[in-house]
Image 1 (tube, rainbow, N blue to C red):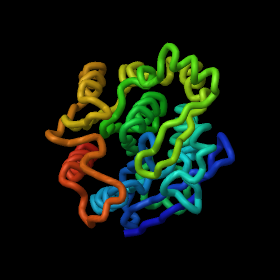
Image 2 (cartoon, rainbow, N blue to C red):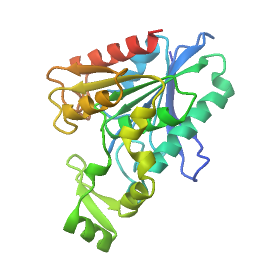
Image 3 (tube, rainbow, N blue to C red):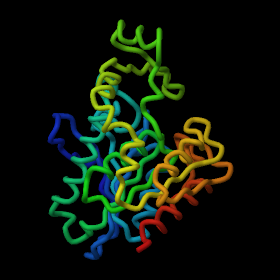
Image 4 (cartoon, rainbow, N blue to C red):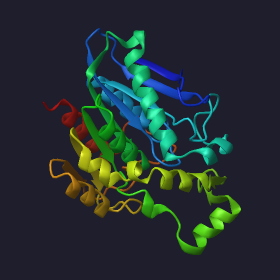
Amino acid sequence: MKINKNIIAKSTHHNKPIVTDTFYIENKNKKPIVVFCHGYKGYKDWGAWNIVAEAFAKANLFFVKFNFSHNGGTINNPIDFPDLKAFGENNLTIELNDLEDIINWILSNTNFKDEIDIDNITLIGHSRGGGIVTIKASENSKITKVISWAGVSDYGVRFPKGEQLNEWKKQGVSYILNARTKQKMPHLYQFYQNFKANENRLTIKNAVKKLKVSQLIVQGKKDEVVLPIEAKNIHSWNKKSELFLVDEMNHTLGCVQPWNNSKMPLHLERVVNKSIQFINQK
């Protein structure tokens, strides 16, 4: 298996690097491309994501995962959040642009041309990333399938309201404590402004209704972060989608950070197997 870690993909939208990994079996067989997007406060090396990447590669898929450019990681430290300034400057449009840049980077990279099937591209997103891949799949005709793992159904409802929103506007920034790293992570008010300025595009329901590709919605029944009703809502907006509910599975698909086991947790393994099966369906 050929594993390339921490490659720098350049953005056409800003000067920040997009730190990227590729996993594949180098055999000059053109393989379906799978691009994975992490969620909020996430990163490409979180939990068991590297074991996940190897599982997809062993299934003869070309697997790509990356850090969103403004997720708070750096080239030297792609894990955790040394760049809180960038974290605060992030927004959903930046993440959509990063995903577009990654897709174009894969398709134009001459190192990959004998290994990738450019007509077979699946996007997978976890949590907030589930919304990002759904929107991208609705607007980029190169995408052939889309999968969300515990994906959100609505960004708008997650913003504060009333006095809390007014205080955010007045201060220009609010903070959330990262329970694991103990960092106070900044959210600039521009995140909300960006959403409101692009609300039609960033409304996941609109994207789901526009989808012309196969959609798999994976959801744990014990998810307390993104409730199962969100997956059911997404499924109701696209009757042709497939809903895969997993008993007892939580929001992180059974994973924790750090993940010190050489095997995936049972729930995540089920999700990966189901996703590979879905990708290989004709």
